[in-house]
Image (cartoon, rainbow, N blue to C red; front, side, top):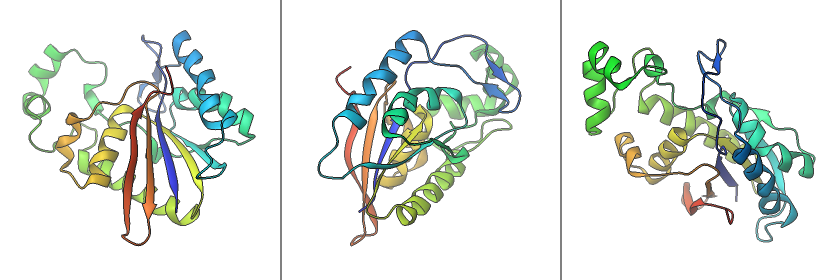
Length: 209
């Protein structure tokens, strides 16, 4: 049985940290976020999870805050985090960096869909929820085969993890807004070969924070 711990990155440092390669803000962790990263070691490394065995691999998105979140744990486990773009945050396209007022004026249809949250939509020059669901599904399918009967960590983002919930619970993607995942929140899922499905074990666990 493959077990995956999806972890939202710890608190980030707000401000202007535009990354031209990513075409989006690429904020580092805040001082509080760095403290959270250190505390995560006790959850994943210092206290082995008896029922599932040691961590076999760690995957992170292309954003620096995901790697920073898991770096202390990775050092303790002697694992090198692997970058997987499929774990990137939902691409909100031209919305990134715009004020609500500017978005309403420039992209009224997308803004209405964003506010109403009743159907899927595309962020201007960004992604739809369904497109993100597809890359999450591809990641899950690949890792359950690559890491059969192993445990891995995947460090990702708020929007992506909320869409993960829609994926494994078979919900419409617009219902992602009904979930909340905090900075440093842990989601555990396990693949059930008998039923060809993923079981939700825990959601938004805060590791004693």
